[in-house]
Length: 373
Image (cartoon, rainbow, N blue to C red):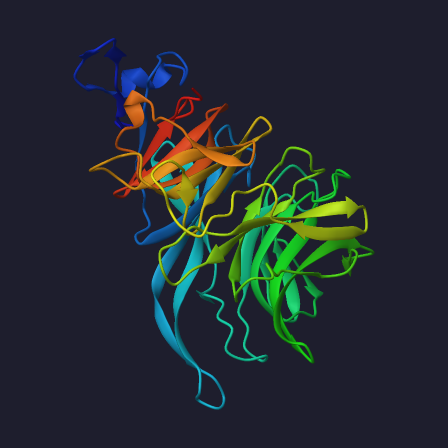
């Protein structure tokens, strides 16, 4: 048995008991054995991590974690040299938890952050999910002319795919028919100019088939650029709508919307579930920037940058729940007051909880790190 350590923090009323460090004997405890417990799962073997997600890629009692590692920057130029941009170059690394902590078991090739400079420039966009309903996650790489589906047991499938510049992708059962779709956010160039559209694609006869018509994303006000944040359940909408968030060059409240199924073969965009404001106020919780999305029951939650901040003098990131068209800030538990890193849902030794990567270390919270009330 290894000599890793677990960090346990106990609070009783207004009295704070010092942190207790237990050796490997504590490893036999159930993650839910002690309230307000934080498990230190060890150091991340990968540096410069900019995102993480977890899921069952293998049949282990703990999930595996896919991290995106920043490798550097690349300068891009359009063919006429009128447009320039710096893009982040990254790769995916799959981490598997075992007796020696997290260890890398797979790495992708290099990927460039998608930037729209011309109709002929594209880059692979990655997403993960159980696309073939075999109970295990796959890595899906979406490019401008193909989709690669990587089974981490060594199998790989490539299908032809015609698209504009792909800027985001997600696996989700958008229409609620129990079969997952591949959803892409693309920029297309045609006689109407440069537009962002969302496409919903289903697996059919060994390839990908477009369901319904592409959905153009437009607020009707200003020139917003949107990112694909993920998919989540929303009250009064079927299936798993796809959530979009605006990208702003200046600090202001973000604009968020959802692409949902009107019928099995028809999709539309709505901004109704989310509050829309042009300014920040002290009385409201309004997000700005890219959010991480979670569902707890049927409630959509977001983790990200909220203004005004709820933690004076501390990290700016907080959790909020979307209820009745407004964001309600959630108070952090005592054992999560330092929480400020990357967060995802994670199954540790059969128990579902929350994983945080902060300062190169993984922390596991068996219970939600926030209070509902």
